[in-house]
Figure 1 (cartoon, rainbow, N blue to C red):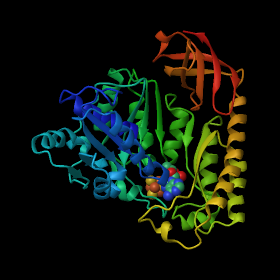
Figure 2: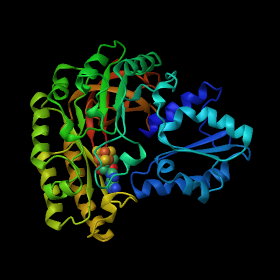
Figure 3: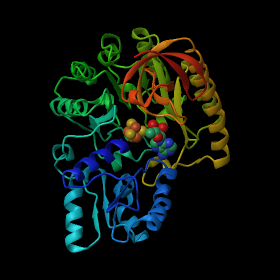
Length: 421
Ligand code: 5AD
Ligand code: SF4
């Protein structure tokens, strides 16, 4: 979502004559987007600001955007004199205006409220796109998991109407997108049109001729509909991959996390996906060391992972985020125990990921080549199952979908050969 947000801020600034540069030294405005989800992500802000201070032109404006601003805007402005403008996630459409105001008045600006208007109504339609593009269809979250800052930083759930989404998708395709990843903190809760769900929206988008692949992330288990599950069977452009975070394998822990489903319900949803699409790749997020998590409860997570069999996953130590109920719970788990549990879980997840990847040796599929590889003559892309895939191919094939055969696999990537194209 942050990558998408940065692109939309770039688009908003482009209308006012700005062009993008990777060089901090050359920039007139340095834009730093931030994430507040875990402590480690937030801490990066100040080390990045140090680097920017050393590299930037004296006259360059420094803008900090994102959820850290939403949560702690006044505090970070106090802590770093370098910041000229701090802007929260719901105000990005105002960025050009704020830069202009700053240039006129020279005062530092904090803009982190939740305006009545939707930024999406004001942000310009994208003129640039990567071959694999992002498109936000839903933002914010009403779930209030007890550990999570998102409902406070991104605000309550908002779904964009399909007319707006289709307009943006058409612009992305015109600008070169072949794949679109639909984004939302709670994407399968999308309800932008009355009586329609994400499955219906995906079928609509699949009608766009230039669009070849559709993905979506992140889904909330108990909001999954059979209609969306069925789309994985009846809509070939929808890729066989679902990111479905369970977070923990113990019903007591799930309840304490305020997750509104049980392990049994989760596994039923997984079975429903596999029924319509037996080859579907499933991934999840996990949190270890939630307050009060016992060794036995952690082992329930390990058992759940063994039963489900994941293609890939993200796993984190519980991070006590200020303002969340879980940060105040008793029985916080020590760092040592969290580290031990995380290492054990990650070893299992990596083993599964390796086995999943190795099961593809000799198989064929299409890859959308999105970037250059480390070595000359190599391009990188994603398989339908979201595996990073290295293909020997000339640079001119960047942005193309090619048919390949897998020749080697590791835990983190596949190697494949071009079959045609
Ligand atoms: N501590 C650890 N992990 C967290 N996540 C969200 N909040 C926290 C937290 N306080 C993880 C969840 C979520 C992912 C995006 O980040 O697993 O699915
Ligand atoms: Fe955070 Fe996701 Fe829970 Fe919403 S559903 S509160 S974004 S973890």
